[in-house]
Image (cartoon, rainbow, N blue to C red; front, top):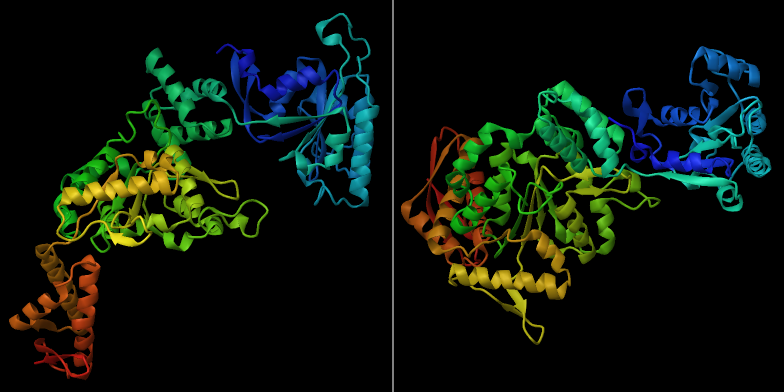
Length: 619
């Protein structure tokens, strides 16, 4: 690959351009990354120090001295001629290639570097962020050291080495620079960079698309079958690799390529390698063949747990099939890292919205433990967003991360349920814009959680009740309304809420047509739900007491009528009635009933006494 100026890191170009007029450089940001570096026969990825040396050596710099607070001082590169020259010029006493050194002695080395005429050289102070505990509250030794550094930055002069040809391109006067490698510019005392005209701050940013593209071409050979691919396929591979790694350093691209090499991932499946790296899981459940078989038979499986919601279940399965086939957002030019699927369940309370989310988890991942639930009523205050997403840097608890981001890193393949989303604070809802669009979120620790392999489910009761012109809460849809009427009114209320009440239509746009409206529970469906719950009770009695519980036919008919006469609260209301009218009196009766030697117990009667207390008779 031909090396062009575009592959040379910008910070290197700035450094070379400024060495004739700047004596010191504070290099911050992405300093631990790899960089495209020219070598004989092409370019490769190299760490910062190696990249710096390659470019400085072309300007006749003879060596670099590297200092860090732990090891001390050492010459770079570790080649015999270089080590011999640096040792002679600086009288180094090396032990295993390193010389221990205090800050006091380092001042002397800095002065000698700045004024050395025998050979061009540079000094790199690595881990400069760790030279002081608090840059704005220095102790006496630290303060003296940094004052000396500031004074030296102003006193140093550009140098032409002895014997250099001043007419040659590399013969111009240049400083022997001192480079401070820091995580952030504020890790240095602020007065050094603010008050000195000779100190320049170089910020190393994350690589842009063109640099990632060059790195992708270089790393392609680590992917299986890359050499057998056509030129067109290799170009497509590099573009896909560069696009999917937006926001990642080049060292991450190298790690992805190494991961692909170890896992035998083919270059045509570079997206799998990127996702494995991002979520930290090598096996992708979405690629399993059995998943398609499960979804093909999903309707009866789901309707065993979610009764009477055929339209909602059918639409949910359609969206799920789209997710499994990787076609979510396929109409867009670039889908980025959007979640596998987004569902917005709306409808009355107790009709199966949360239950459907649990059922989807069981269907896709075979385990409800992959289901993550957040009750959004707990996040009604703006400050509660810190708990969900992590406190900002500098605030108490920021290093703990957020509940949501931590959960996604632990379970990247999951169904995430945000229950009653309308009860959360609008400022928190803004964070979902980033999740729905980019599929990622960064917490207070600076760590990124990826949602690209998750299904997000929002539930809401919006549209069931609305406010009239007087601000009074009125029922918008009622039991008995046709399904198309319920869906139209609920959808309209949801649109009004996001567009006019919150003034955030962009959130609704991200959700798109993934709104799934649930209808009211009808009497036949209510009877089915009752029978299922009653069956759960008898099963529990069998498990706990090893006896069969039976109900006299007239008792079961009476109990069914009581529990299903009011369906306004859905299946949850049926369960509440069943607990009050049957489970409580049954528990009292069983407590007093002698179960020894019994294999079957029959409930012969249910009645209410004068104190309105339900009583169950057993036989």
